[in-house]
Length: 176
View 1 (spheres, rainbow, N blue to C red):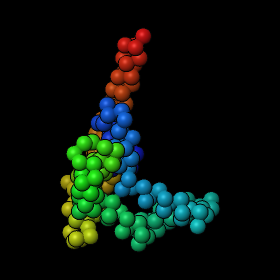
View 2 (view 1 turned 45 degrees about the horizontal axis):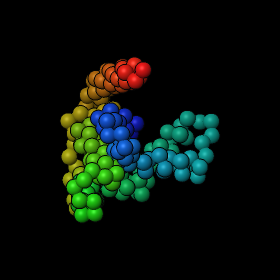
View 3 (view 1 turned 120 degrees about the vertical axis):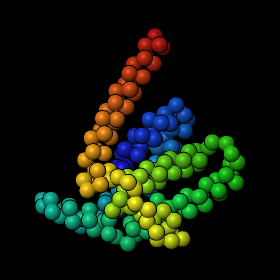
View 4 (view 1 turned 135 degrees about the horizontal axis):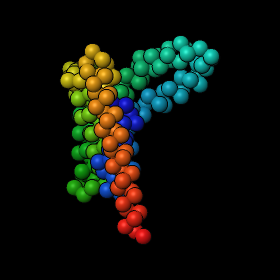
């Protein structure tokens, strides 16, 4: 799933946790932040002229960069997540804290990507092993229901936005 959609759906689910929602959302986009940082680095290092092919080339170079590959695998790894969750539980006990909210958002990202990545899936148990679990559908690849996913996701996305707007209007009316 696209990074922005991870953030949106996490916000939608956890929006009632007013003091923690920003941490949930940050956790949900955290595994993909490496792409944005690397894109900026590469765009500065290799300035894009007026040729769209160069932008396409930079994006592909970014995904193939060894640092991005390692950080992507670490960011989508269940063992890495689990170690950090255990450390967080030891430090904060069982109460819901900002650190736990980040980790729950991160876990949601991993689970959603597990379901929506096929050819571009990553090893879930990295660095312990390189076995890749491929999801049943792809959020983008038409060979794995990417078009159908996109249509259904767009319908739910618009419905969720309408729901949030209606919810906000009702809240404002009740405060008057």
